[in-house]
Length: 475
Ligand code: ASP
Image (tube, rainbow, N blue to C red; front, side, top):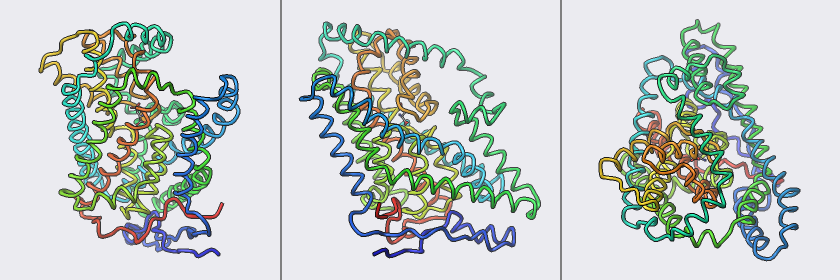
């Protein structure tokens, strides 16, 4: 049977009383639809099974299925299912960014509070990303993967991926050409609808910020209906995400199948040391840096943290996109960690495009790996510049699959590494992308916990007694 838990923390839950106070309307503390727990297997277990089944099937297809069968299954089964799942999440990202930033600012109450939360978030993003990039650089200097690869293999790879590399180089030129004062001015969007259509998250964030600030400056009876409307928009989006999560077990399986069925073990072996360096550094960051922050600064048990956020981890790993994981993140922060929505709704959208610990690790290592491979000697000073550039480009990269690659090419050319050399790593990039995106998203959620704690509106003691995301419903 269905037992229902009416205890889902409402989106305005902890700040609902504030709204009620400000606007004198108790309906701001609203109840959401109850989340029910169905019979049978919990959804997150199903998603995990989907992950394993998709990966194993893909590997089997890669090794045993004839090429045309493999292609057909990819094209007619894995691709459509994976894309439908991905797009279900992705289509709500822009409305969600707008609504949660605007509500976040309105919930914080005034410009000063928003400024404080914003600066704390940025400080956290930059500090952790810097530590991450430095960690990556240490690892690549220790392991030196680039000095253990044949130049013949190197040239072969460059040739094989020449076409794909060329488009990345082109994208890099476009990205770096416009880097300058315009980059900052462009954050102030000319047209928020166009920004949303173009996937320009910063433009939408800026519009949401202005919208929220303006809301706090209105008389309460003027602001109230708009806040209610934004709140309802948020609710609708969360429902769409819940629907998307129902197909997650299949979507995740399909996305992973798409990777492993095309995946050459040969390439994994050739680039093994490089892949190990990247994955090793990502793992170190996840197992040392983040737990240290959680334990000593946030005061939370890291094991509890990771177990509460596993829906986000699996979504990030399978979609390779921080942006597509944002809806899940918002729900997880609020419902599984109990973090007040005005904090999560503000920090997480910013983090999904600006806080990329994993990407910085990957970029630093890749630049140095390729430098080693092409006998480009980088002095300590230059390596520090690599770290700084990795941080800046990680902050600037879009949270979409492969979002950092064009910026990475930009750093490479800065140090005299041919842009085409990106071809060497493109063959293994998907698996690295999945892994670094997971670390990016863990960073976003840890930032939210950090800000919530330091603002004094949340403590680890406020964890809900059980996970509510994903909703354990029978399908
Ligand atoms: N896929 C990454 C993300 O969404 C960005 C990147 O490093 O390519 O977080």
